[in-house]
Image (cartoon, rainbow, N blue to C red; front, side, top):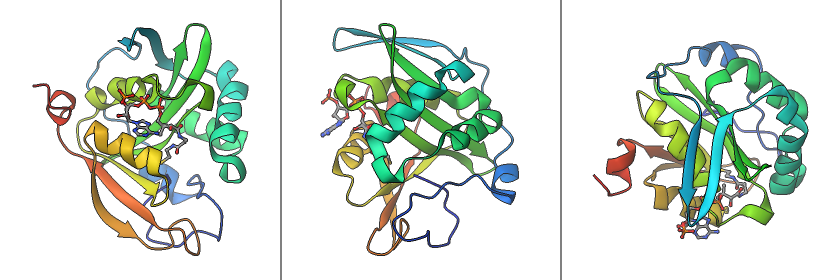
Length: 195
Ligand SMILES: CC(C)(COP(=O)(O)OP(=O)(O)OC[C@H]1O[C@@H](n2cnc3c(N)ncnc32)[C@H](O)[C@@H]1OP(=O)(O)O)[C@@H](O)C(=O)NCCC(=O)NCCS
């Protein structure tokens, strides 16, 4: 994940797009007024999606570390996103446990999925799908993202969801670490073939 800043990140570091002008560029949210709490039942599990709150921070950082290891964003980065992306920083709960989070920011071009991660123990249960299902209907334009070329599970997840690869960005995550730019253009129902 990370911004399409057109610059190469430091070697081996997952970009943390929280500095300077980038924040201001992404400050305006365009939502369609839908309620911010969603409930999904996927594969027999009940999943609640709600907005991130300050008390969720430790758990989100835990999921981040378990998901990205040395590339994990620090707690401060999440607090920054919380201030800037209040409406679309979402967490998903399986029962009473926070199982995943997603962060989307919007600008005049559309929206950027900045990050999404699910606790390894809860993957494959539709958590990430529920997070995107709660996000996409609230967007007025396409949803874009960056994903490591080597992140096969995420690539498969995004493709299954309806994202398409638009271009390969060499060295986006540092030397030898290319990323795919992906985009979801169509409304949710259409994108997932269930119009
Ligand atoms: C990518 C990620 C967010 C997916 O989360 P998830 O909750 O396991 O995904 P879901 O259960 O909602 O998957 C929905 C569908 O996506 C596809 N999918 C998800 N993970 C997959 C995998 N590892 N292999 C193949 N297909 C996969 C499946 O079609 C799945 O539907 P199905 O289970 O009915 O077949 C999760 O693997 C993760 O947190 N990875 C580490 C962090 C990361 O890489 N984030 C993305 C950074 S760009």
